[in-house]
Image (cartoon, rainbow, N blue to C red; front, side, top):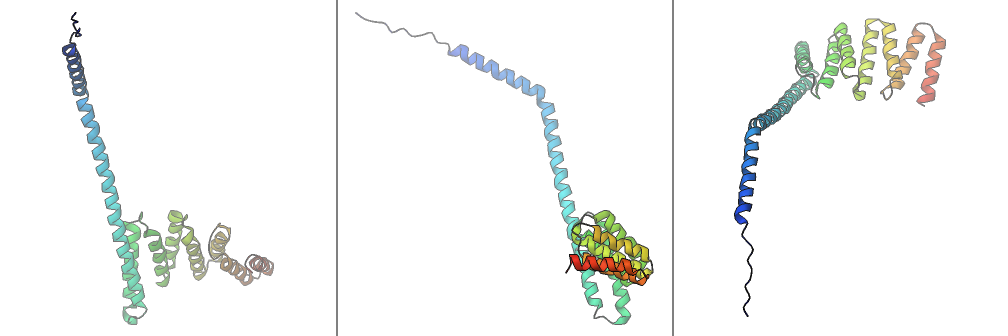
Amino acid sequence: MTYRIKVPARTLEVDEAHILSGLEHQLERLQEYRRPLLVGLAVLLLAAAVILGVFWMDRQASDKAQALEREADRLLAARSTADPKNADKILKEALAKYREVVEQYPRTAAAPLAMFHLGNVQAQANDLPAAIDTYQRFLLLYGGNQALAGLVQQRLAYSYLLKGDRDQAAKAFTAIVDTPGALLKDQALFELARLEESQSRPEGALAYYQELIKNYP
C-alpha cells in the first residue's frame, strides 16, 4: 500500500504580502513624520553647536584673562627693582592689566584675584577711594570666595584707617570676626582692640583682647 504525504498549502505569498504591506505602511508613516524629525534633528545639532561655541569662548576668555594677570604680576615684580622714575609708569601698566581682566572677563576664574590685586595697586597708588570701591565690589560679586573675602575685608579696613574713617574700619574688622570660615580673625580682633584704645575706650579694648586670648591662645 502506498501512502501519500500531504503537503500543506503554501501561504508564503500571503505572508510576504502582509510583510510588504506592513513595510509600506511604516514607510508612509515615516514620510508623514519626516519633516518634524528633520526639524528636531536640526534643533539638536544647533543646540550642540551653541554649547560647544560657548565652551570654546569661555576657554578663550579664560586663557586671555590668565595671560593678562600673569603680565600684571610680572610688572609688579619688575617694579620693585626698577628705576624709581619708571616705578609709577609700571604701576599704572599693571593697574591697567588688572582692570582689563576685571572689566572684560568678569566670569573667569582669574577675575576675583585680579580684582583683589587691582584694589591693592590702587591703594599703593594712594587712590584710596578707588581701592575702597574695588574692595566693596569684590565683596558684592565674589563674597562667597572664602579664601579671599577675609583678605579683602582686611584691606578694606586698612584703607578706611588710612583715609581716617575709624567707624567704617571698625565695621570692616567686625565683618571679618563675624564671617564663618574667614581668615585673619585674630588680627581683626587685635585691630578692633587698638581702635578702642585709640578712642579712649579701655573697657571695649579689654573685651577684644580677652576674646583674642581666649579664642587664639
